[in-house]
Image (cartoon, rainbow, N blue to C red):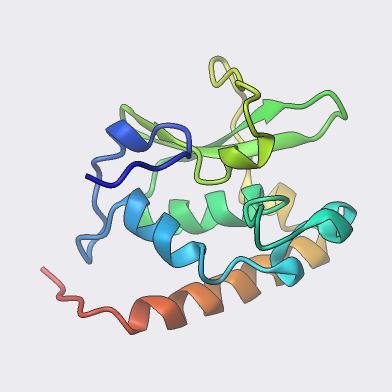
Amino acid sequence: MKKYRFYGWENAVIQDKHGLTPQDYYDLLSTVWCAETCAPRLREKWTPDNPTLGQCSVTAFLMQDCFGGQVLGVLRPNGNYHCFNVVGDCVFDLTSEQFGDEALDYSDCPEQLRDVHFAKEEKRLRYELLKSRLLFARSALPLTDP
């Protein structure tokens, strides 16, 4: 079994309607995350070596599209929220490795709402770009609908 570095990967056993898991989506997203999908305030620091940097909210809302559940947020020292996914008992954060060895506290986190996040036009546009790139990458997979 391949080891991943994102938070919750060991227990992320859920599947979407195509049979894909969060690990599968991490693999796909790793090929499509880019500076243009990174939060503008972090864009100058984004590199292919740290592809998850600045990708949390757009990624978490895409995973909500795939798996349902909630997007929650860890309050960061700068007052922003770092977004992650909760689907039933499954908690995962595909972009956690951007923090290196820092352990985030995923307990008692508030829900993050799509309409609040996407009130920022630039964030909605980044989400749409990432979604189109992800759908293109996923279309190359041999998927079967149940």
